Length: 124
Image (cartoon, rainbow, N blue to C red; front, side, top):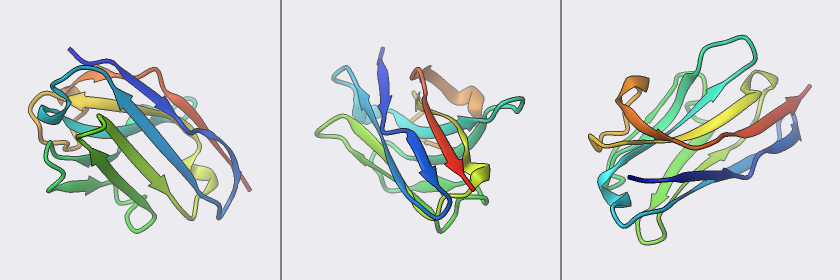
C-alpha cells in the first residue's frame, strides 16, 4: 500500500508557473506508475500526465503538451509536475495517483491509490 500527499498548489496569474510535488510513503514506490489527474468544478476527473515506474515513458494530455512536465525521483519517493504557461482552463484540484501496473498511462481505473488533492487556480 502507498499513501500520497500533494503540495505546491496555489493561485497564479495566466502565463505563470507552478510546481506540484507528490510525496509517497512505503518502500515499493518504484514499482508504481504515477500520474497527475485534475478535476474542475462540475467536470469529471481527467488525466493530465503520467510516468512509468522507471521514468522511461511519459504521457501527456493534448491540452498540456509542451507546457507541463512530469518527473519522478525513486530514491526520494517523489513525483513532480512542472506547469508552465498556465491558462485559466488549467484551474482545478490536482490529484497524484499510483498505478500498480507500473505504466503511468491515462486510464483512470488503473489507479489504485490517490492523494487528497491540491487546488490550482489560474486567474485571467
